[in-house]
Image (cartoon, rainbow, N blue to C red; front, top):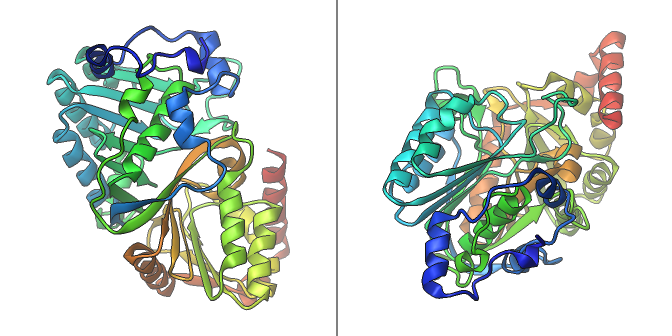
Length: 425
């Protein structure tokens, strides 16, 4: 079944509403799922119209709330879930079976029992610790749960490649969330937890951009071969304007014709006049981003990188240090955040353009994973993100030439080897 053969909004309205609430028209088939996952089947027309544009499509009148800690962001998501009346669409890279995951699954099951259409999509590798039995309650309540790109037995369970790294929650087509937060105890603890394990960035969105985020979820649902839907019934109209933020939703992934997030960052670095601040937990971006960062620094833009000083992937941190000398020579400043695990993925240019979402500054995000980012032009949010960025840099340690020179020969060799391995993977 091609994407254009999927049910459309041209059917009877009452039937469309019933199908939209139930969501189930057929069971997934393995072969078709593989074809969809690798972009060999066209997306439904209603979804493609909102996700395939080459240029950013901005909408006005959005209201944005920014969350810096997992506790506040995940609590806000739970509040939205508990208030749902029609549908809940949740997409996440990591869904755990721990206390935080159980809270979410219990809330989702409760709404499903009340007649709300609940659809959950999680990545099979990111959520490899998820116990299937943890999903029994939600499934029994009528919720649909799909794993993205489950790996066959011949592949190791930790293999990366094409993954769904997006984090999206859309409730009733009126409110949406996206950013760096996965669903697990380490994200909920954040800076407010006893171990201060994570620092993140997440946003709550109201207004016309919600429809664009829901279109990205529906694209992922289609790629994962979730039960068929009346796609256009969700996307016929956008929510009314309710704020003053101008936003664009940037979807990206390995089947897109160009690397959209990488192109956005390179273009924004080239257009920046005064400042560029980029935050990422993992830094292995490839030649084009490195050249764009260096070029901006060499022409006088104050370019700052804020990276994780405490990392859950020490190999990536070592590989990043092998790339710093070229950037430092170009005037780029590099900071490592030590207070907690830095997991935010943001960029802000001249306090006028901000990017916040799921993309790390590494090849996995730019080339192999499905990602989504919110681009915000003008207004208060870019200024707020810049102020937060500068505050975090003040509390971080700076990596300079003296820091790198202090490494011994063995340590330099390990860093170079780590960089080489990441280029080959």
